[in-house]
Length: 190
Image (cartoon, rainbow, N blue to C red):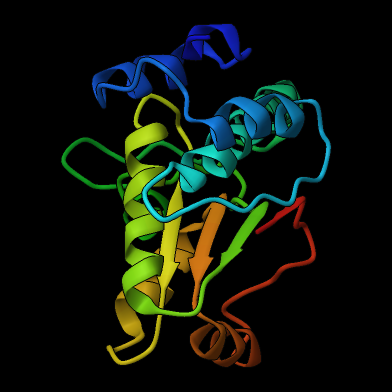
């Protein structure tokens, strides 16, 4: 069996192919189709057998599909929103300056849909790198949070909105207590 036989979306397959993956490991071959079908899975496999891909690929695909379904609603909402007054020539729009380069009035802040909880910062960073690799051709945003470092860069990224959060328990609880993390829209938990 090859990865292209598992029902994985084309953007993810492209990223997986670029990683050099051709044949799924047993945990991937058994887990990915079940997870893609919406089933909960519990898997046990040796280190280095691709467990992260077995859960990350389906999560990325599910959230991509959710965002595609939500896009028409967001576009309709944006069309109903009042427009900003135009700036005079040579003058920047104050609204655009406050929102920043990547934020538009038409795109609401993304809510966290997936939480991957992991015991160590090293594993958290490794899992986040996998989401970067497998999701590189998606428009999904992800963030990793862990203790032992200043929280400001992490809270800045959370403030811009993320779809997928990889976290260690201590920093997660801390940032939830400070209201930087809201898990009320969670659909996936690892």
